[in-house]
Length: 297
Image (cartoon, rainbow, N blue to C red; front, side, top):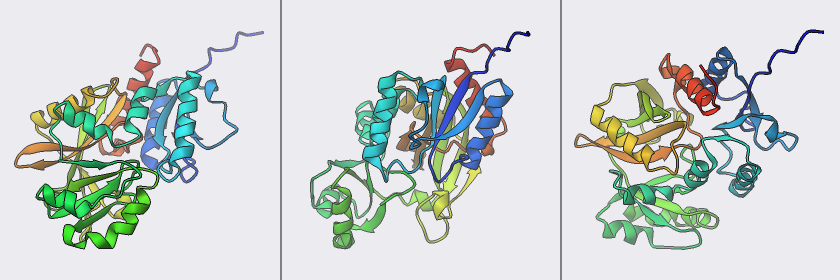
């Protein structure tokens, strides 16, 4: 009888029912993990039949329905954290980043950010008055628990009444963010700087389609690889350093205004990492996971 070979580490790439085989970008990560001896498989977070403790780690990738099922997903997340299963990013990072109120922490830490008003759930403020007091004429309002421009509105404050019911509906179970709309999104696009274990990998510029302001691919947005300044990378890295723990993966989204990079969001929950935009990116992601598992290269 021959000895059984050592079993390969098993990693769950957490996804949702709409993407049972992952987004195509994350399929590159699965291949890269396989190439370094890690068995990676897509697993739907809401599948009640999964033994999560059978995995060496869970990597949160594309559970992109979490913001439409926030209570259910948050309960799932808390259960995984309580079970002690290893998670990437770490449970404390995911818990912190789940709600965009984390932007207040980053602003307090001195991160150059787009000015933001946070309205807690259950309130019913005069959004136009809040924005007008800041001197903002055109604003963006979005939920604090959201993704992919979900329930996001852009309007001039004189038109705020048209969106009152929509915003009130959002505020029933989550807060909202109010920010000035920056025209640089239309003229120069939104930058995403990608990091693995705090090390810069690559950057992309996301642009909305003609006549829109949303840069997400669901709305026809496009992306292209770009070079970015060292000082922008340093500023993005400082945002990452303000997280509760060093993320395995991080995407720092922002816009450049007057030559200065301004943070829009620090995505350390389930961001698209634009792996297809850089040939070395899938391997960098895979090796970051390998290192956190304590495996020798």
